[in-house]
Structure formats: C-alpha cells, structure tokens
Image 1 (cartoon, helix red, strand yellow):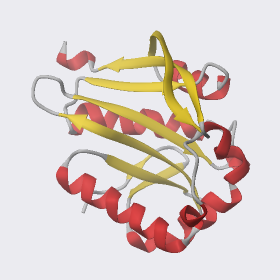
Image 2 (cartoon, one colour):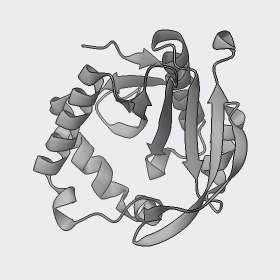
Image 3 (cartoon, one colour):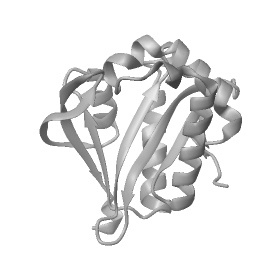
Image 4 (cartoon, one colour):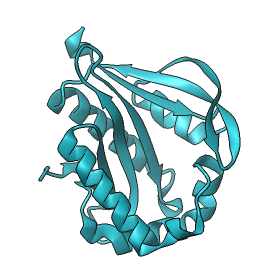
Length: 184
C-alpha cells in the first residue's frame, strides 16, 4: 500500500474502502457545491455501496498505475474527508502524462488546502512517478479553481470548446499544463 502524502495542514491518504462512510458524508454535505461543476450523478451515487465501489476502483487504478487518488484529511481531525486530489488516465512510454482533478469541502474553501494538495500530488507525479506532464481542465467561470492552478505553476494552453459534459451541459474548459522541469 502507498504511503500518505503530507503538507503543512493536510494528510493525503490513498484510497481505502474503510473511507466509504466518510466519503458518502463528504458527497452529501457538498452536493450543492459539486453539482454545478461535475458530471450529473444518479441517485444511487449517493449511497455507501457506490462510494465503496469507487474506492475499490481507485485502489485498482493505483495497483495498475493508471491513476492515483488521495483523500484529504486535516492533521487536526484525521477522521473527516475534506476533499480529494487525483492523477488519472496516466499514460506511460514516451508520453508520461496524466490529468489532475481536485475538489474540496465547502466548509474548508479559501484556506490554501487545495493549493497544498495540488502541490503535493504534483511533486508525487514528478518525483515518484517521474511523469513529464500534468494536465488540468477548468471551466472558465470557476475562478477559484483557476487560481489554484496558477498558484501551483500551471500554465494556460488554451480553450477547449465544449470539452466535458458537466451537469448535463457540454462546457468549455481552459486547458492548463505543468511540466516536470527535471525531465527537460
């Protein structure tokens, strides 16, 4: 099993099926915050069974080295999930690239937690996995998320029109990239 990552305020723990109840609570208390910026969810998404199934998929992806999701916990209260940050769709070989996604609990916004988590996982991607490129896509109106990427050194590469279907609507996204300077 992978070791957790650590920042000044957070523990970033790899997926574990023991998180199923707390993950469900996370989604229930953040439903209104997340629905406008995530794919549409069916009613059964908000069940313990579906959250445990997602955690099993996260574990399988890590074992296959195709994705790594870390769940965020405060060092002050290591029982409540504050969010997650993930590297997904990892492509090896000559590409050495992945996609980054992250989300944070509504009660913990604007505390620097997302930036801490993105920096820690970017370091994991570059130093441990030795990836070359991390890509992230953000809707233009999601200013806080754009700011996180900018603070973490991601550079804007352009607009992807109607890129992802979010909450039932094809949404434009701004494409950001962070390159591993050590592999240049």
